[in-house]
Amino acid sequence: SSDLLKSGPAVGSLLPGSFQPYNLNGKFGKDRFHCLVCEFKLNPTVMVFARERRESKDPALADLLQKLDTAVEQHQNASLGAFVVFLSPDAPAAIFEPKAEEPGKLVDQAAAWEALLLRLRPRAEKLKHVILAAYPAEGPPGYNISKDADVTVILYRRHQVVGNYAFAESKLNEPGV
Image 1 (tube, rainbow, N blue to C red):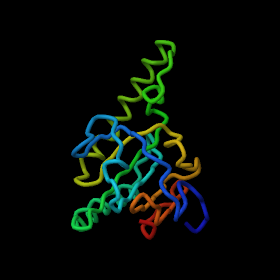
Image 2 (cartoon, rainbow, N blue to C red):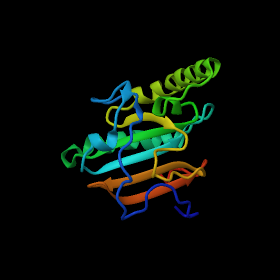
Image 3 (cartoon, helix red, strand yellow):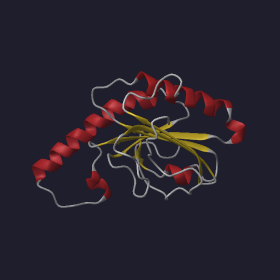
């Protein structure tokens, strides 16, 4: 992007590996932890990491997801795949690395997680082909998702990154989409 925000694996590099976000839709992983890098195999794929914000309605992001949904539909013969991973402090790291926490904290985490799923479900229901998932705020290990990046778009094929676009908060706009 123009302001040279770097986020995610660089163009030319291979994906750092698989990870299992919580999927809210999709044929194979709906309502469970499921690896989308594995699901899309070597096919051309658009992977989007987006910061989930409790309050914000992000029309540009919604527009991007809708356009991706259409693109996947139009390019089914090319086996194009697409998924968006919402990064949120409300996605429990506890599920990924169980620790004995105080019960009160676990209850709060569970409530925050439920609320996150409630916020994301309507977005997932609008998408026919793009899979929507949730993951803790720091993003998957090795992916180096920048804290300053609101939206990171990675295009890859055969697990090699062919495009990387990062947008700071409110920088994703119509031309960006």
